[in-house]
Length: 197
Image (cartoon, rainbow, N blue to C red; front, side, top):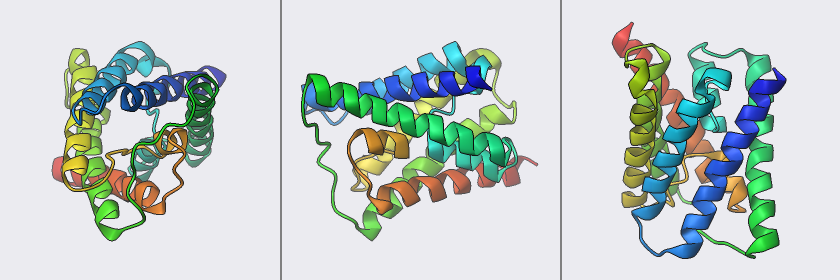
């Protein structure tokens, strides 16, 4: 289990760092989702065989909701992912200083945007979890699903986080972002399961 938790910590840290650094060097709305999708795709290929490469508490809870991970393992994964987000925050705070994604305040539209974006993202993940995608394409499908999910969430009016650990890295504890992504993950994965089982 230690290898799995280490992989989740490392993957979450680097995904969070990529998002944090992308928002500090560019004003482009497209750079962050593209970079996040590429980083996630890379980690699917590099640590997917170790831990499954959840690197997102919402994804872990979504997989738990369809019985793809035990409660005990899910709690440990989420702890490792939270620590990864905090580690990224610490690195950026120590080297660059304050970073802000320009997150909007608590709002039902933010909750809905995060829910929809995460549902789309995790629908793609579920296709991989159920073995409906050729293994060689796993990273492409999951990274592409993240790109699409973030783009939709941003277009619908949120910051497009779709990941509570990245939210922690950004210094956000907004319930709209956390709950929207968790509920969206459960909806995306259970919808896929019901459509294909």
